[in-house]
Length: 218
Image (cartoon, rainbow, N blue to C red; front, side, top):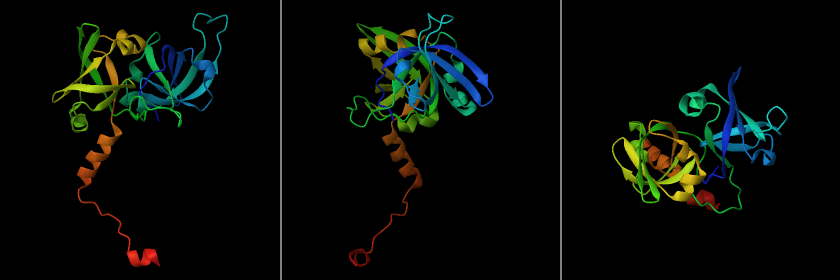
């Protein structure tokens, strides 16, 4: 579980096929703090750290890095498969139980990808419009939460198949958003509360277990 507050950005050092899918290598200052088996969100996708490595003579400029495996299905339904060496990615370690939740609950399970349709500069802020798959439309509400490449953001505007987020200067400067252009693919994860509400409506008048008071008291 994550909260959509990006800790730092990393740089993709390598992305190559392996028998089980793909292996991504991300150079980041976080790598020395990571433990094997730990969860880390890469552009909002929950991955497992399978290896860490310090800089060597051959890759001194790259610095510390971690490795994670990406299944073919994850590569298909997220934007991770479009990354290349040099791509800047958002990184967030899993949330601690004793921490404040400054964003919203983010699972790291991407629902779909969207595309940046427009980036508009407004004073110090950036207004970003993102395409929205029609199947996800019921999960979006104005002023609701959405994770875009793992960043917890507020839906500032909503159309049938597009939504708008307004990016404050700090978020623009400390995430990968400033490295993206119109047409870029981004990972979208809808608010988990909305998912449960929509699911309950789909199921309809589902059976509710009822306790017999006499049996319970007995």
